[in-house]
Amino acid sequence: MSEKKHKGLLITLEGGEGGGKTTQIVRLRDRLSKAGKDVVVLREPGGTVISEQIRDVVLSAKNIGIAFTAEVLLFQAARAQIYREIVLPSLEAGKIVILDRSRDSSVVYQGMVRGFGKDMVEKLNDLSTKETYPDATFLLDLPVELGLQRRVESGKMDRLDMEGMDFHVKVRDAYLELAKADTHDRWHIIDASQSLEEVQEELWTKVKTVLGI
Image (cartoon, rainbow, N blue to C red; front, side, top):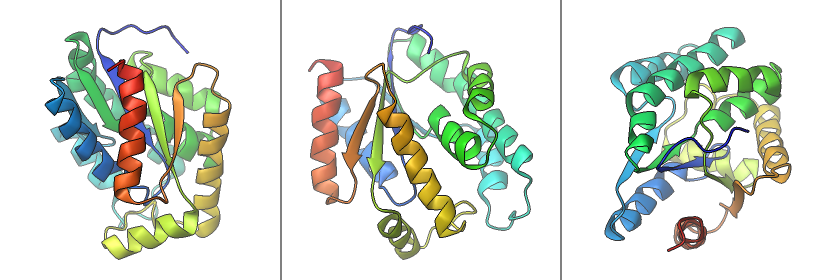
């Protein structure tokens, strides 16, 4: 892991399906804005015109035949675009950037679960992000069955959501493995099976600690 290279703060929310990352990020943005912080919120893949077009391809339920090699490279292409267009300039300007997924998603989904290997994916991540790492990563963890149930109830199932139970179990296990192996105090695990309000309060408490406010 490289030393911090930016003036701002990069926060990422990670986790399997149905953990409520998007909802929590919106609430977190609002609270930080009220606290006077300059906040930029983005999602991966996506966040720019080009990256959103890539998202449509790589996550569309219609593209179930996409090759795993194409998958890993498409995610990296979307990441390279958003980092150069928005993330890196925002961090250089001293802003707080909150990402709904980032490099760790690729390590988990493509590196550990798809089998490309963590080292290879991290090399691609470094290329895409110019060796930029999050300052804090919050893992919204919950039982796989509950997460998938929430996704089904939301009516928003993408190509990865439609993978089998074994796939999603491996995803959860891989995330927990990464978080527990952390030696830089970057990862923070939050029980996402709690209510939205309980998750938000725990997340807010941890973010305030990271920010020193």
